[in-house]
Each structure stands twice: as structure tokens, then as C-alpha cells.
Length: 223
Picture 1 (tube, rainbow, N blue to C red):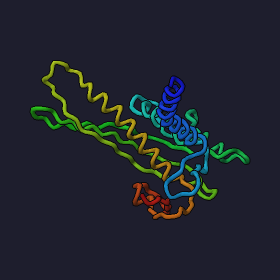
Picture 2: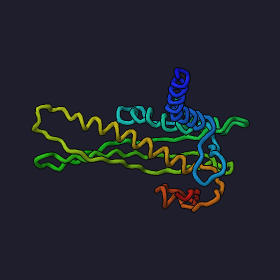
Picture 3: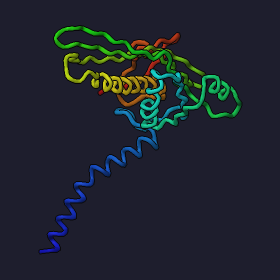
Picture 4: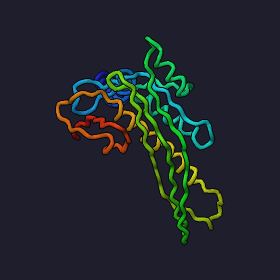
């Protein structure tokens, strides 16, 4: 009877630990071998492994660097944060050098709109001009797109606390959301041009809102 009880306890512990093993395994697979989209038969790997993240060094832009770096690294991107556009161009012109892609974020700005009433309705908007430089069939491609993220909240100016703590939290949320938007567009641009088993094509200029001189198509699997 004691042995049977011990076996049952051991089985319970192992079953409880299975989800954690699955999460650890999935994380290792994601960061080490790229990522796989539904409908594709193989993991998706970026054509250019290294990407320079270039963000203006000021109080408004700098807080975006950390969440953007984390978002990209979660997809297995080797992020470089100490290069300029001139450094990237010089590297890519050298014969035999490993190609480096680039994400440049300029003109990060906040706008605050207030609708005064019993409670002040505040809409906080963060915008940025984002440029993506990558390679398409061995040729450099540059796409530029303005991105905007916003969120509204209510603020009671008659409250005991005069600090807008919720506004500070919203700013952090906006930086994280902007980083996710930039990462999503970068993935859409740099996806390998392969055909899945069941897919539909979407134009970047229409689907992701990216302005480009040519028509670059991305392949999006059906949900």
C-alpha cells in the first residue's frame, strides 16, 4: 500500500510538471530555430540573422529600445544596438561581410487629448516614423511606415492624489504596444517567400500600411 501511494504521488507530480516542460521546450525552439506559422511545413527563419535597432537618443525615444529589443529577440533575431545607419551601410558594402538588416525609429512623439467633464477623459497617442532595411533576393529593400498607437483612460482631477499614476502606466503600455507593432511589421516584411499548403497573399502596402515604390507581397496562412 505505501508503494502504491508513492507511485500515485509521483504520477501526479509528473503530470503537473508537463505544462512547464512544454513551455520551456517551446521557448527554446522559438529562440533557437526560428518560428513556425500554421500552414507552413517548416520553421520560418529570417533571411538576415542580424538586425541593427537604431533609435534616437532622447527621453521620448529611448524607452522604446528595451521592449523592441525583447520583442525581436523573442523571435530569434540577433539584435545590435550600437550601430548607426552609416555603420550598417558600410558593413553591407564590404565583400564577404555578413549582411545586417536595420530598423530605424525616428520622431517618436506623444499627443494628449482631454475631454473635460465630471471625469476627465484623456486619450494618449504615441507615434513614430519607422524604416525597415532588409534584403530581398540579394537586393537591399527599404520600406518606411508611420505607426500610431493610442489608449484612452479617465482621470479624476478632484481626487486626493494629484499624480496621474494611471497616465504613467499607460505610457509604458504604449511603448510596449508600439514595439509589438514594429516587430509584427518587420516579420511581415522579412518572411521568407515560400508557399504554404493553404495560403492567401496580401499586399504589404494594403495589409500592413507600408509605403513602398514596388508591390511586395507577403504570404499569410489561413486561420
